[in-house]
Image (cartoon, rainbow, N blue to C red; front, top):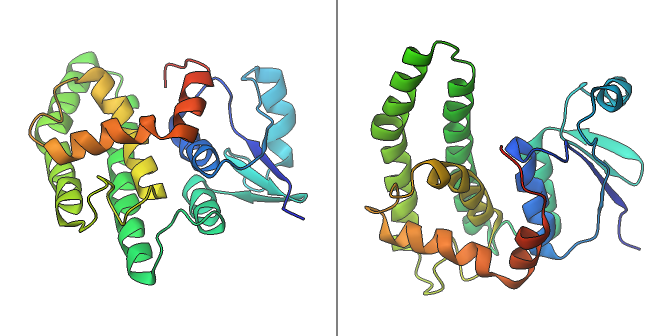
Length: 209
């Protein structure tokens, strides 16, 4: 009998909780998305019941586990989305670790209140910090011997999902950011066309972050 999954993350946000939902979608796996809806009262009631007092949390047959990347990596392994060999698993982990670094850079921008300093930091991120990461990812697609357009191997992995998740946010604000990275741009366009992901992406609620 397959495990019973419950996933706890704010329904009105994507943020660091969206990768887990993308893994579930790509796997076609069933889970209960239990929110909270974002209401302060709901969150206040839920918070003390969580392992670390933070979200996201995955409940597996009644046991709760925290940390977004830990959860996503576990599910990717369970569903065969982490690579088909140990070498491919190494590559997918490497890519996801790079994405974590990019996400931390983006998160830092949200905590800058001064509008002038914020604009400067955003400019530095786009022009100085992000390009090395994009070049790094472009090389992964170039070196992949498969012709499918994926970052690793010949089918979608959680690495593709993690990259798509972060680039969705970046491309929305900077539509031409991938112009110098054609293979990465093709990968970014490929992921949302995959059947299970396409269905999920069309049905998920619209959110700001």
